[in-house]
Image 1 (spheres, rainbow, N blue to C red):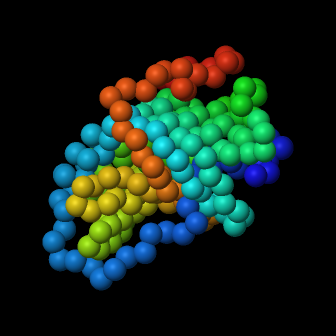
Image 2: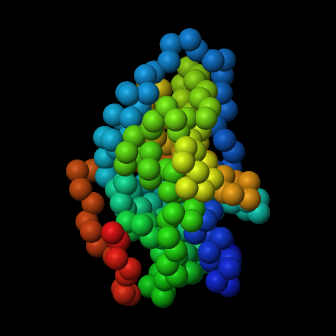
Amino acid sequence: MVFFSSLHKTFWLALALFGLTGAPSFAQETRALVPLSEINQALKNIPPQSGRFVQSQPNGTTASGTYYMQWPARLRFAYHGTGDSGSIVTVKGKFVAVQEKPGGEPNWFPVSLTPLAVLRQAVRDGISQAMLTKRTDSEGVIALTLQDPTGELPGEVTLYFTRPDLTLYAWRLVDVQNLVTQVRLTQIVPTDKLDEAVFAIDYDEPDEE
């Protein structure tokens, strides 16, 4: 997988963090809606986890790799590459670090410049009715499209949950230029705690708070 070599393209990788080859399809809508309070409880209870991911990017390419997630403050995506060339994207607090290869010097960007800010807000604070712009329910999947009602956070995010267990397994990000990336999590392995070393970066880091 060839990744971006310029700072501009690296910044795009930070904006287009996660993807999927296509949005989950929906069967006929069902009548019984899971209350938003139950979905928020499921978000609050997302366990630390690891697994694999598949991502589609706005330019039509597809990437894959492994991930570690401890929302709302920690997320690490390691993209498959040739040899040691795979990129690393790490979310730590309010910042995203993009390394073009393992151990490489990172470029740091505020999460607030990406649609990930809406995703993090939903996981951290819960989904309010004011954030919800669209909802689709099928027999096996619930999809919620969210925006920041204040307009301060850019773009939108659609969260996909399995039903009835309410596992968050995919999301779709749309930035301010209407460019779309999507991610699907697979082979999810929950755990009680992830080693903090998983998210370590061997360079000076900005203040997370």
